[in-house]
Image (cartoon, rainbow, N blue to C red; front, side, top):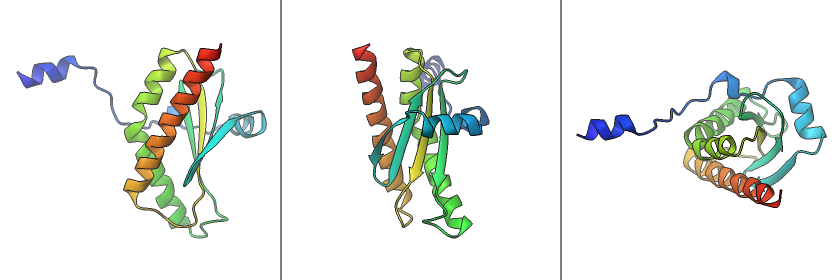
Length: 142
């Protein structure tokens, strides 16, 4: 009975609903201006901050007009980043929820060329793992 074992497992949907998007200008300013921490997982620069919010994790995706003049290129990059995050976010979301944290994240694509999707997915996975490591170290200090 394979279907019984699948139905008893906790199913996690690979979605990225509007509630998980970081949209408010005040929240974005707070993330960048008031002590957001960050690191580089080339080609993605990640900035994050623990906040008081109703949603556990909110994400902002940035593709700079300075690096990509055509909107189609910026949209493709943002689509790649969203897709990679959507597929691999569960470990981070579970960790944040388990520890009662609320997190705002900005992922900025900083390369000058569009990389293949498998490279972007691998780098997003590495950046999410690094973020979990940093958050767990911070929780261990408290």
